[in-house]
Image (cartoon, rainbow, N blue to C red):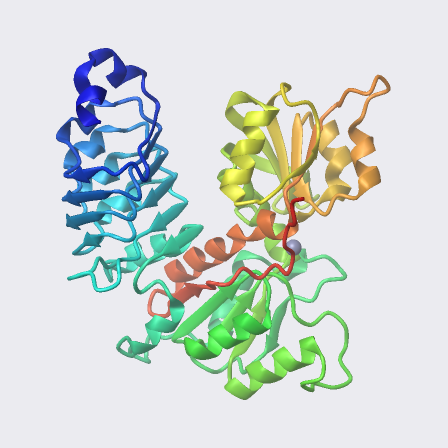
Amino acid sequence: MWDKLFAEAETWTTLTKLDLSSSGLSGPIPLEIGKLVNLTELDLSGNNLSGPIPPEIGKLTNLKRLYLHKNQLSGTIPPKIGKLANLKRLRLGGNQLSGSLPLDLMSLAQLNELRFEQSPGAVNALCAPQDGAFQAWLQSLNNVRGPNCDPSAAVEEAELPTQSLPTVGDIAAALEAWADPGFAESYDNVGLHVGDAGRSVQRGLIALDLTPDVVTEAVRCRASIVITHHPLLFHPLRSITADDLTGSMALHLAEAGIALYSAHTNLDAVAGGVSFSLAARLGIAAPRFLRPNPDGISGLGAIGSLAEALTLRDFLHQVAEQLQAPALRFAGHDAQLVRTVAVCGGAGASLTAQALAAGAEVFVTSDISYHRFFEVMRPDGTYAMSLVDAGHYETEQHTEALLCSALQKRFPAAQWVRTSKRTSPIRVFAA
Ligand SMILES: [Zn+2]
């Protein structure tokens, strides 16, 4: 199999994708693998490959996906993997690898998914270094699976010193210095919903929404605060009992002594907030507000340009991959080129006219109603702008990583954990 692959020098440079998954391969990964310099995808999963991962793999700098999971690979991870600047997905799980993940992985700016869960009974299993910066970086990824990444595992760790721990009030103040509650929409209810501002926080759990699963997770990992984007309490309550969803979750948190804080439309409205971070995830450099507020420092949505024009089809692939969206609803023509992109995390359909007026070629948001799609149709039936509904959860779930890394930086003595739960109640049924 390998000999044929490396026999002709021409193959080395023309090959862009190599899928040898479940092909019955055994023995070591050959060093010649480093010759396939134009590979963007390498899938060697589900074989019987053994021995170490050769450092030569670091030469494949165009790789976007590297799948080595479910083999018998052993030894430590070569730091040269940190050279794969375009890598988006790295799967190493189900091997016999050992040692710490190299700190060099932090230079993989495009990385979205990292899996390193080990085979049951693996000797000296692989672990993530306890380095603070590395842990924060790990938290910032969209999809991480590996030992010690389950928040409930954190319970066993040594207790942190109490003096340097922030209080619930310190955390609220820091979040409000970043995302002023004055920027929140009038209907919104941001801030501390449950809890004692004077209590100290050793561990915080971050989730887009509060769900019963998130409450259970917070109790299990002994979090002192849960920070959500979507507020739990919107309407005045007449009672807090276990009989309805909202009351029961508030009650459980209060009983467990866990605070709840929400940063919602105020976090949408700041530069570097929800929409700017969505823009960055979709490859939009230097975004600006789609609808700036008169104060000049806040606004809604974001608009900017991709590094190069893409067909709508290719752009949709990128959106689905980056946002891990199971499906996209859209209006537009597949072959149309898009470069100027407007986005709004969450329900941003009311900004459609603004996006069109600002010269966007495509607008990505969520909760777009049927009739709204006609607003981008010209009299001749073509589209003045493509309109994409990527899902509310999908366009906002990165907010968990955003809050996590900001809080880890601001309060390094506490431990900030992103929920392992998908909090959206919506599933997709494809016929
Ligand atoms: Zn939302």
